[in-house]
Length: 87
Image 1 (cartoon, rainbow, N blue to C red):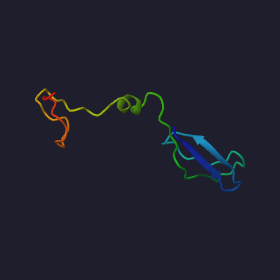
Image 2 (cartoon, rainbow, N blue to C red):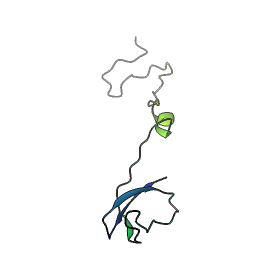
Image 3 (cartoon, rainbow, N blue to C red):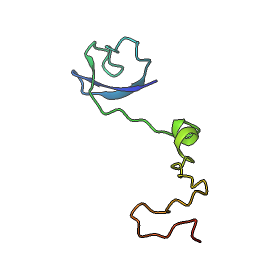
Image 4 (tube, helix red, strand yellow):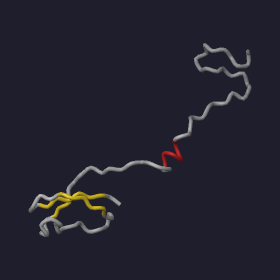
């Protein structure tokens, strides 16, 4: 659930509220009890932790290595390296 920030336009009281995304915005200020509470625009904050997608999908994967198959192919593509079959 996201945390929304609110500010009262009457008394300047500021607060945060943990709400579902489809909940109606709060309107009554808990400080002055007037219906002048407005939702502020603020940056969303989140943290990737635990066994999320990064831990399970990408952390241990390494690029695939090209196999030689023993056909005497050169170990480097520039032509300056020795062939693996010559060794």
